[in-house]
Image (tube, rainbow, N blue to C red; front, top):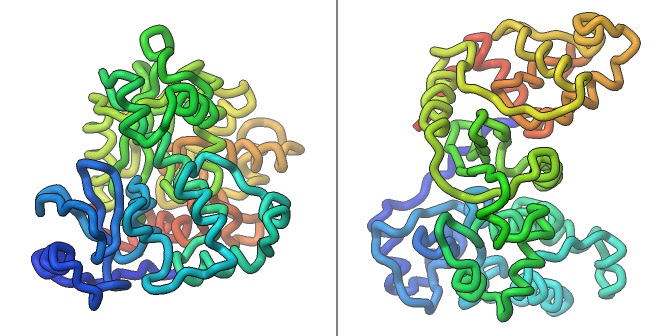
Length: 358
């Protein structure tokens, strides 16, 4: 089981002074996120300095991305300080200009790049693969494009798009709906909720919570796209009354004070998926089941593989506890949020681990 690493940063005042003074000695020590713009910068950035209350600090860009920030186009924090790998410049520039394109290994080869080399470079310098990095950029930019009551054209231009058509295309590509359709389409309100195991995306409709996933989940973008189509809705950052209740119940859960959730859910799916998800919620907190046992529970003992797939299609982590299903041999099996998180959740539920939700 992987252990959570707690990286101790310098005092906030020290980091803010380093930012103001563009102190190069702090390069590699911290990354700063600017709350008012959604941009993250390196300590030596030449851009106008924000007020102290409008910044937060991260140990690396992976953390900054997971909290929804986008890289600054002035200081290029995704590039190692003082180092510009010539072979990667073109790709980094493409990401900087758009960030909306999906790159497959073949796309990299067509640009004369070795996918393995690109992957290793991003893992070494950013602690994540190139695909994970580009996926985070797409999600963060889409979620940062629109806020309630913003004028679409203003948002588009403020977000760096030269035309409204370019903005519409980028937003529609990820969410499945044009931003101008906001007045005549359903809305999934989304926010980020901090937990001891990392930040999570939460989504809510008028009926209930429809999305709760760790922000670095590999299939998050796919889940968002599917959910957008199922609900015929667009995703909009904002506040929702259910988020207060959800945050409180998650806090109690991680503190070991809650074993069941009462927040309403909105979980569109097939009849089979609904039965599988309902069976998951019937597994008592602190216990586990095998896929075979789950198949028996829903009255279909031959549907082990189908049960496993339905578990993987679950869009509401923790509340619909797919982490409580393990292999027949008692070993942990696949989990979208990572096996180390699966083990941590089971440890919390069994009382073997206490966490702080702060």
